[in-house]
Length: 145
Image (cartoon, rainbow, N blue to C red):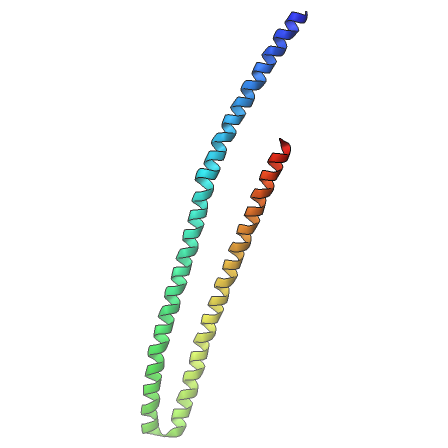
C-alpha cells in the first residue's frame, strides 16, 4: 500500500507541476501582451487624442485672434469714417460697441482655456491613479509570493 501511495503522490506532484507551468506560461503571455502591447497602445492612442484636441484648440484660438485683429482694424477704420461723417457721438458709440464685442470674444476664449486646463488636470489625475494602482498591484503580487 505504501508503494501505491508514493506513485500516487509522485503523479499528483507531476500534475501540479504541469498545471503550474501552464499557469506560468499563460501569465507570461498575458503580461507580455499587457505591458508590451495593449497598455502602451492605449496610452499612445490617448496621447494622440489629447494632442489632436490641443492642436484643434490652438488652431481655433489662432483663427479667433486673426479674425479679431482684422475686425478691430475694420472697426477702427469704420470709427474714423464715422467720426468724419457723423461726428463725435457716433464715434463714441461705435467705440463702445467695439469694446463690448471684443470683451465677449475675450470671455469666450478664456472659458475655453479654462476648460482645456480642467481636462488636462483630469487626465493627469487619472494617470496618477493608474500609476498608483499599478504599483499597488505589483506590491500585492510580491506580497502573495
